[in-house]
Length: 339
Ligand code: ATP
Ligand code: MG
Image 1: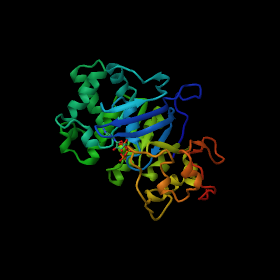
Image 2: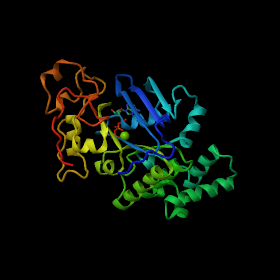
Image 3: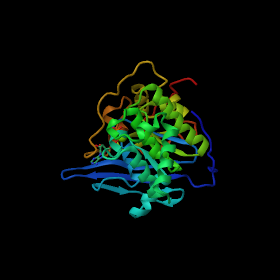
Image 4: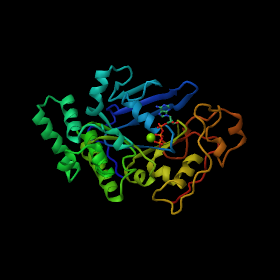
């Protein structure tokens, strides 16, 4: 894990991403799914913020909300959502298109399905360059190939391939090339290594680290893999059922998680700190029918009567470390691991 304050990231600069009170619901005919509820976070230049949590916690929804890529059945509310001090709310299609790719880009969770199946890789990259830069076809092709060569050793072959002709690792690298091509200042990396074999996984992480450490890119890293979190993240936000239930710097999350969910999650997911995985018991709640109490209550080994009586707790300072917050009435009291 590395940390810098970033090339341009003095504390006086506004954060690259500042989200305050983001909520997203998906409407369907018979239900409304409260996928993200009152979530706030910041990403600064040259740092990595990791969003972790089980499937359906709302992680990808947050990434898509930042880029204005949510489907038509999504309702988005936020007190504010800013990129480098500038509001992302209420932008028109053209303004959003300019920000996407040039300022903020996303490595999508499923690389193969995020690529356009009917276009060769060459066309997808050229289209991106020509949409954002004043380049001739030849210039755009040269830029595109050079960009792919920086990330994929066998770039010429992939350049003329259709997405279905790519291996998972190649598709992922094409996806990364598209995400970094215009030198964005923020990259949302949604499970960037999930489908990759160990060698490609390591190289992918190195590419992201270089962008962060040399170009001061702010990384919003979404992952199930605590090994990746330990290596990459400066700070961690743990999400459960659409909410952030704990946030802290990465060392604190590993050494002294306060929320029982964070603790259970650490035991259940691959990472550097446990030799045997212990699955979390039970299932996350139905997001279309949430009780007012803590959403983790039915699964919580530490629940007390207050948890059953009162509405869900808010994030409150926890532990001794600055910036450590947990939303729990009966947090884990003792650091669980030595340093
Ligand atoms: P995973 O780790 O599996 O990728 P996630 O944390 O990224 O999960 P999201 O994809 O953000 O979770 O989904 C959050 C919730 O919103 C889930 O309950 C999901 O079923 C629901 N959801 C996501 N997209 C839509 C949609 N287009 N329409 C309706 N519900 C949706
Ligand atoms: Mg997801």
